[in-house]
Length: 229
Image (cartoon, rainbow, N blue to C red; front, side, top):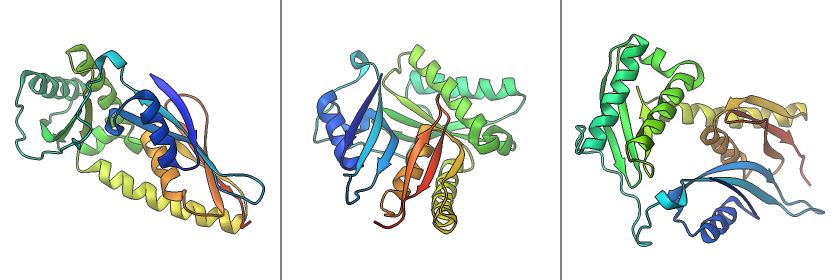
């Protein structure tokens, strides 16, 4: 389910969402839709969209318990993990490639799956489109076998970390370009997580602002020159 909230800051908007939905922060994903800095005549705000699991399938946890990430045993520890690993390996084989699949990490309501393959670049695809598609299919399958409250993250060759570093550099370089040319720049289509990273990276830069343009899962972030008020 999707909900939209607004606050003076990203943190405030997230706190409002968590309070109204009666959820812990790790029980929903956040997509930043628009940011507006404070000006002399207009108050700043951050508008977010919250993506949640179906409420009937969300487990209520002790509020004092933080998510724990465990990097220990790469082998499946239960039938659910075994089925996920077998499913991912089967998907890749149907693409025509061989891979070994193992558990990368375990968190509350989240599990990381690592693909080891000589064809990692193909599995990743341009801008991560292939690995994202495989991840989407895997999460659909996970829901069908009883993992509605578990999010599966697929990775290979540490692509996720490298992509984050690349996007942070892109955000800063684009902000510099916008300052120099005094014109907005529209970035490539990105998934919700990647867009949020761009928004968050530039959130504290006073003379630029960001907003998401487009429809669907892959929207574009527009970086806009504001000038110094």
